[in-house]
Image 1 (cartoon, rainbow, N blue to C red):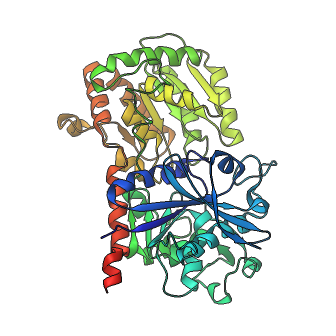
Image 2 (cartoon, rainbow, N blue to C red; image 1 turned 30 degrees about the vertical axis):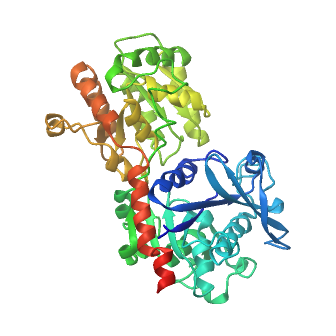
Image 3 (cartoon, rainbow, N blue to C red; image 1 turned 180 degrees about the vertical axis):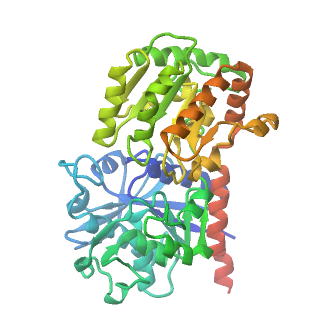
Length: 489
């Protein structure tokens, strides 16, 4: 009896293309699912960087015309992944971001670019490649949101579909007059289909038409059914609550491993936490901070945006410095937030340092050298940076939302007594609440035995992909019984 075959569809997949955590999930989850007997192939766009990474690629299908030009479907294997790559130069042969042009604006044909990805997914789902006919098509975020729609309106038989929301704030809305261009039937433009406030809603289509819906944490799956977090889709998600669930993300614990990480000044594990001191020194030196052993060192590795609470963090920088702390920030984002970070560095020389941009080695050094990691997000579907912090013993200080609340156990009095706390939570996301929690963090840090216990609890947390992979495998099997059983029926 053979396990389910799954086509995973994503607009970015690590290590080939990455702008955020979705790429990490799309790259790591198929590897973990192999141990569960699930056969996964991943479909992604043929960006220049993707094609350049393929040593060998076999054309398995050609389209004379696919949303504006010819295209090929390539089959390849790389970085341990089995891939389908949609090679459509008229859509993807562009430099820079997968989504933004040189002017920083969305590519004007993003509707066609990602509808093509979904159309290719639907075609594979219906047997375009006889050697791999999936039982389940798993679509990630709005860029793949039309895949369930194309399959739904194409009739039976078809594979079952799963739609995963990594961030509900990004929905993919496009003009209604593109309906025919995208190959969607007129009957699809209804409230029960792809129509969303007079537009074509890519994410909305997936959420309305997929057989099962998942988010990347159980709490976020509940939050998005409320007006506060539902981004206008809470009514639909509440109606579909019976097929909606949350499965926590994991991280690649081989890549994020403080005992072997080559990007650290010193390697360590939970039994050798004293070796973190070398990373703390290296972090201070790299960011021009004063060598103050009496200063708790806070880190941030994040996009600098309103969602991530960067404005609230900036309001607290002065208070953090008054408490005797130091701060290192690594990230980029909204221009006003970047300017605020630079201003904080200028206002507090030797106490605040920043790298406005992104550098992988700096991110690893923050995790391995900071005493605590700050994540003051207003909403957070899952979050990966706090999972890395747990793995590296950088005690996470997080807002009590989404996946942050699901993964970090607040070190309140009873949690400390029960030896369960591994970080600190705060709510609401305001300057006052964060300031009070910084005071609590500093007080705990000044109690070395207690702080060490927090670090040990953090490093003992299960942040890998094993458990999520088992949960996804169970979901696939529920949707699609083993093929041997189906053929006998």
